[in-house]
Image (cartoon, rainbow, N blue to C red; front, side, top):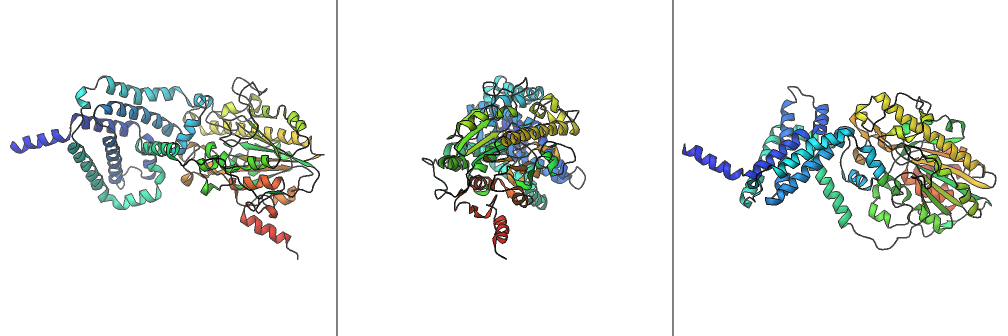
Length: 554
C-alpha cells in the first residue's frame, strides 16, 4: 500500500492539471487535425501485420512530438490563450491540407499573407466553416470558458523538465525497435513529415516570421547589368508583349501533345512552343519576381531581389517604354518603378461580368500607349488571371465552356476528376483565345515595328495527382505538374530572330532563369551578365555551345 501511495503522489506531482490539459489538447490535435498525415502515411505503409508496429510507433512519435512542443509553448495563465490559438490555427491548417493536399510551409504562408479579398472568398466554403467551428472554435471556447482556473497555474520548472525528459525518453523508446524503418522514412518520405500538424506548420510560421522581421535590409537599389550596350542596327523599334501566365500546366496545351484541342487558335499561328521549361518556384510570389531577376532559382532571395534592378528596370533605364497591366493580384514587386495599371476592376477593365474581369480586357486602349510612344521601343507585360484555382470555372466566359460537365465549386474533393479536368481545360482554352488576340494586336504593327510575343506561365498546378491539389509545394519535392510550365513565342516579320532560328531550341532544357537575358537580347542589349551574342534564350550554356557551332566557319 505504501508503494502504491508513493507512486500515486509521484504521478500527481508529475501530471499537474496543466500538464494533463496539454496532453488532452495534444491528443485532440493528433486525432482531429492530422488526417492528411495519416492518409499519406497509409499510402506508403498500408495497414497489415508487417507495417502495424511501425505505424503505431510513428503515431506515438508524432503525438509525443506535439506534446513536447506544447510543453515548451504553454506556461501558467498564458496557456489558456496559447492553446486556444493553437486549436484554431491547427483547424485552419488541417482544412487546407485535407481538402487540397497542400503543405503549409513558409512559402504557402507568404502566399496566404499576400492573398487578396477575391482569392480569400474563392477559398471559403461551408465545409471550411463547419470544420473551423467543430475542430477549432468550439474546443477553444470550451478551453476558455469551461476549464477551471487550476489548469492554468504555473508548474514548477522541475516538473516541466521531468515531463520533457519523459517525452524525449518515450520518443527514443518508440524509435529503437524500428530504427531501420525510421531511417527509410526520413530519407525517402520527407513530404509526409511536412503534414504533421501543428508542429511543421509552427516551424513554417517561425521561419516565415523570422524572414520578415530579421532579414538583412539592403539600402538603396542595386544596379544590374551596368555594362549593357545597345547594338541595334535595324531602323524598326521593338514592340514586344510578354504575357505572364497563371497556373498553366505544360501538359494541358494541345500544342504540347495534349489530346484535347485546347489551343485551336494558336495552332493556326506560327508559334514555337518550348517543351522543357521549368519554373523558378511553385507560387506566384516566388516565380514572378524570380523570372524577372538576374538571380537564378538556386540563388534567388526575395529580400535581395526586391533591392536589385530587375529586367524591367534595366530596359527602362535604356530607354524602353515599359507598361505592366495586371489582372492578377499584383506584380509582386517587379513593376514598382515602371507604369502599372490595375485591370482587376471595371474601373480600368471594360470586359467584366458577374464572376470577374477578363484577361482580354487588358488589350483595351493599348493602341493609345503604342501611339504615345511611337518613337520608342516598347515592352508591355500582361499578367493574367489565367487558371488561378481552385475555382477554375470562374476563369472564362460561358462561350468557352467546351468541355463538360465542369466542377463548379472551390472544394475540388467534391468533384470528379473529369469535372476538375474539364473546368481547368476550359480555362486553358480561354488563354489560347487571349494569346491569339495578343498576336492579332501585334500584327497591326508588324509592317513598321519589330513585333514579338513571349508567353510564360509562372508555375503549374496539381489537379489531384497523388492526392494533391493547387500549387506552392516545396520546390525540392514539388511534382512536375507544378514546375513544368508552357512557354510560347510568336515573332513578326522584322524581328531579329525568326522562327527557324528559335524553333531549333524548342526541346532544349530552359527555365525562368533565362527570362532576364531573353528580354535584354530581344532589345539588342548586350551585357557580360548574359553573353547574349550567341542567340535567343542565350543564358543556357548548352544553347551557347550549339549556337557557336553554327557560327564557326566550315
